[in-house]
Amino acid sequence: MTDTQPATAAPDPDDWRTLPDLAARALGGAVLAANDESFAEKENLIRPYPVLHQAHTFGHKGQLYDGWETRRRRDNATGNHDGHDWAVIRLGVPGTVSGIVVDTAYFTGNYPPRISLDACRTTGYPSPADLRDADWHPLVPVSDAKGDSVNEYEVHDTRRWTHVRLNMHPDGGIARLRVHGTPVPDPVAFADLPLDLAALANGATVTGASNAFYSNPVGAIMPGLPASQADGWETARRREPGHEWLDVRLAGRGVVRIAELDTTHLKHNAPGWASIEARDGDTSFELLPRTALQPDTPHRFVLDNDRPATSVRLNIFPDGGMARLRLYGRLTDEALAEMRARFAAD
Image 1 (cartoon, rainbow, N blue to C red):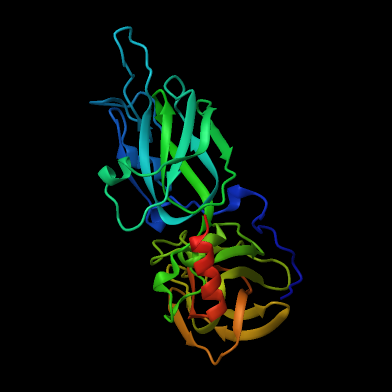
Image 2 (cartoon, rainbow, N blue to C red):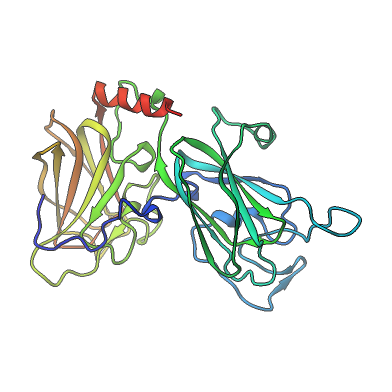
């Protein structure tokens, strides 16, 4: 797996900020409950868009904020605030949490001076009432926060979580919450079944990209249909010899039998051709030879392959975008056992 141009947008494995946001709405994340949302709705916390703000824009609840904002606490007769406000978020994909971002953009006189974050692990589909009695564990202790700032908190915990609870001490407003981590799927549904070995939701990871000028390469392995030209991976126009590429570590060692290369919404910026190389340990082999692609088209290729792989490189010629990459196959027995062991680890 070589090319003449070095990677310019490879994720840094030592930087938790490059890990996917497990609470993202596109992955199925949701804000399930909050004790208060008097000024601005809790659902804004996980909106995927940059924070919007227009000063002196008032509704019936006051200044309109793109975030979650609670009333001023008055918990006793003296007017002091002894309690705190909270919101419960279901992670779209359960997993380990490596760090969180609490963005207080445009909250200047009404931000919380301190925050904390708890997490729990549940089974099934618990209701907000069920989650009140869950076994919550602190991931971020009560910590200082700044207003109109991107507040970052690293997490040192290797356990798998399904929900988080964001706490404001005592009250105020937060624009966005990002929960960066690594998916750890439940393998119970994977046994002897074909699955997308390149899916983020199944535990796959983008490990490198030659260029990511227009969009995050992780978009190529997100669930669902692409919503727009920006929903996927797209490079700048290449002006040098060579081609662009995307590296993906599969959910586990498995045999890929079908490849889907989706250029939906990419009408004048789709690649002309693509190929896929696979790697199993130190061995590389061709999975899909260089093949012509069409713009704005989902392509499906049945592969003549019975060799397992642990990672792949998608090559696009010479540049362009890929809305989605899907690689359907089966995990090896050993990989499935490893996934079960990881899921059960505490």
